[in-house]
Length: 269
Image 1 (spheres, rainbow, N blue to C red):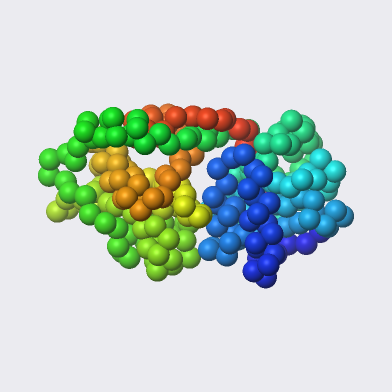
Image 2 (image 1 turned 180 degrees about the horizontal axis):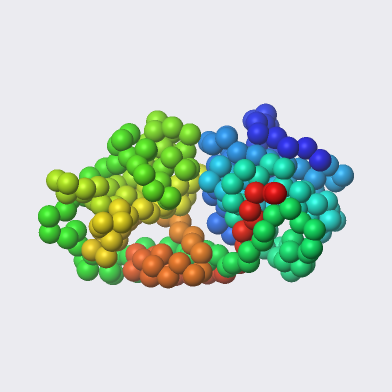
């Protein structure tokens, strides 16, 4: 087994090609293997390139590969040991191998991490649905929508650019975003969390004092318009229990296409 935080370009290219086989939104994994952010990549040593585990700095991770079933026990041992894990991890599995007994093995007695089980929704964007509802999305009185700038990189919050990009320059270079503001407050930000080829996954953060006013909807609608004008496909994923995110995605022209299990893993003790 080996753990890598940096890879040769050829290695990253091979892993990126392998990710094309994964029928799920895996932009966070692409960001790591493409070298856009500093993450961790582990390869099951007993089978060469049969299976990989990639962890994004935000905590999202993915196990994938053609031979996951052949090295399943090795992967489970790696995940349960969790030496690489310094924050809570949100583990997703290549859907081809979702039927393997992940929950049973990860939650078995003797593990060094607490494990929780969740479900994640992947959405597909329908531009016709977006355009049909666009006229009903307005910027509330007293607020304006402006392009994000470098100062948005360090914005406080849990879903913010600094969690997904190494610096403000990379954040703006790979998609930036749009914010809704007034004279006193930066109310909401829609931004690029992951960018890969001609697709971009959105992140949304609303200031606690500005919630319930439709600001996230307005910011995201402007972001989507900007992406469509550039020929970029917007992507959306969220936890199934995040009802506000599901409702917002639906309002913006997304519809759910698959729901997959994923696992919360705490740092080992």
